[in-house]
Image (tube, rainbow, N blue to C red; front, side):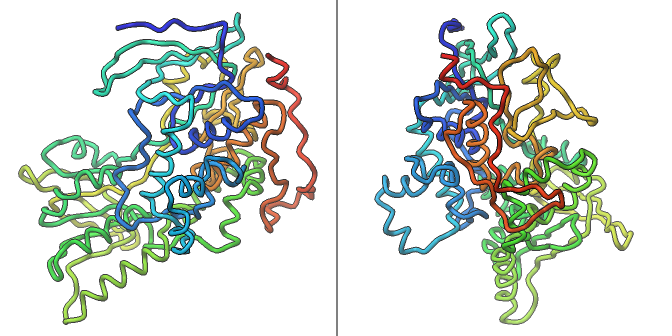
Length: 469
């Protein structure tokens, strides 16, 4: 294995760890900073991939196409979705299609187009550790370069004045089902891997879908459309009290604006912790069009008499699960409102049980003495999405989609990606390469009387990078 020597004489202005939509957005915006920023972004994947297991035919984004990587911060950027369409000679067809919500597969293709041209992206690089070098006043980032098979090929080290961590989330599998999900002979899969196992699932005699969010609804609908009328044999279970629509009213959507993010961040920690679980319907419900399509499909199957062999049961939790023989699964269920219990035997299970933030403790272990945490031992993150560090660390460590506890339900929302990236770059440079709106919502979320149109003062703890050089 070879080793790439570190270049202390030429540190990067910014190193990004992870190349999902949020760090890709940050990289695209950094590319447009006047005067240039020296950046490098690393990801262990061989290429950009955005939820490949959920690129179901006709599935659309739940945010408008304006929520691309850059537009809401810089609509003149060459990395906008409209620029992608222009480059592909598809601008007029898109215009005539009158689409506001684009296909999920099209968003993935757009991001791959950007990632294929944007300089400074390094796929096939697994970041192993991040440390602070007090003598050089730089972050040290150790990485392993991987070959196409995922095997270690070379070791390397980069240095940076600032770091942005955007390693995303990972599929969540409920504890009772983890042993089954790890058994190769039993088809218990997370929705993240749905398309890779779709043919196998369709051949199963009976299928159970668990989870009442958008992914669960899309998978249930896809399976339903692919099964013969009267022989559907699908059971859809959910812990929520109903298969509920996502809050999508105009004023409801103002919870995904910078105004609400700032309001939420200013709340006491215990209030924020109580608030997030109560807001599940802002981001965990089902698109109304998907709900309507499910009902329409079920109704169509009653036209010649009888009911489809599909069961939809909300308010149910899975207590335990086990195998029956070698190929079947037995789920032990409990209905919360009735207080009743039952068993369900099925041939396959799809877990649309969501995602959890990837833990950062291992990656940031080298920074642990410098990290400042809240009362629940979570990272403290300021309004600039910067992790609170000891004063000895003069560089900034930013996080993306790891700050729901400090910034609210908008943290994983694609619609805030460009605004957050611009916020980070404004703070990092000590200037304002991306002027941001002072007000973004009609709703006044608090009674503190602050004038939201007043310019936000520039951070005093940073020297513009132009002076650093």
